[in-house]
Image 1 (cartoon, one colour):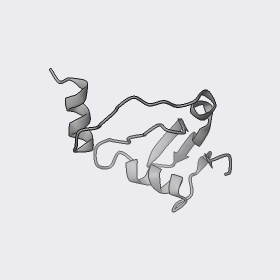
Image 2 (image 1 turned 45 degrees about the vertical axis):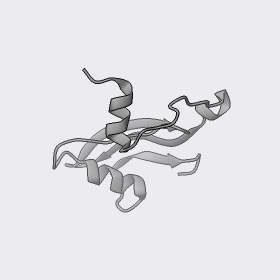
Image 3 (image 1 turned 90 degrees about the horizontal axis):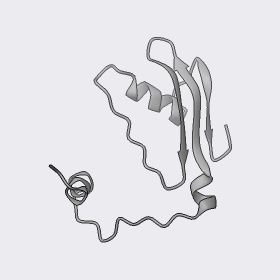
Image 4 (image 1 turned 120 degrees about the horizontal axis):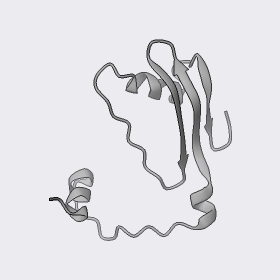
Length: 91
């Protein structure tokens, strides 16, 4: 069994002083990154997510699963075949 503190230490690499997050209602409700039905033929299909301010997103998968290709579309390095990416309300 692994407790929460041990898990956080393993991910972050150090002890955290406080893990209590005080996020206001309006801040937590604010979507910073929105991905809707993003697809790129042969690489990834129909991915949607809404990331709010203060949230941390991890993307994982086996080699060849489309992780890098998905992120390249979010960064604007490649163009998706369909879907949309909105960053702080702007396409």
